[in-house]
Length: 257
Image (cartoon, rainbow, N blue to C red; front, top):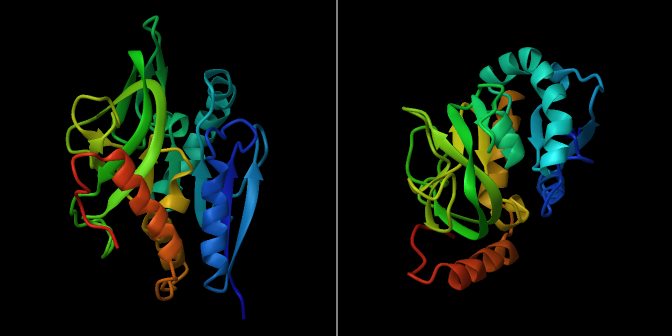
């Protein structure tokens, strides 16, 4: 009997910068290679969605006009969505989606726009954009599954917003190369429950298979499954190491397979 998971892809036509859709493709393929049918439901503005039928959520980044277009719809869904996130529904949110999961965003002209408030972060418009490749290290923490803490992440950032963690917030990783959340405190992204917010595009998951498997493992656990043994990721890790060598000139840092 084929095992099945369902992924909700929020606003795929509006929030899809720098290869973000590749994250969904990576999750589908890595599930498929394990004999799991990962079904993808596209969720657009105004489209009804039954969050209780989903095992995983993804939302990418978008240009300012596209983010503004979906923000009202996303926040209106927040009252329904938030209890599912609190109960452990896994979600990967990239760039603009990450910002919308925070408490608020202060625009360049001082306007304070509300966010969903699930991730304990807030964002303010910066004076300059953070553009370039990022290398970051995931530090040990009790919430991480075995094998993830101490590993490295690689990706690409392009954002004007500066995101700051609230007291007690858990960063996804610590920056070795690049700006990350704000270019000041050395953090990249944020994690709460099974929700990961990040500025890393590129797309993120094909180059970081350990993070993709973390999301799949969280989704499988909600079904009472364990994710099967590791895949043959020699090509993925070869690409990962090549990016480490290219963009982190001070040495590799961290642990990676």
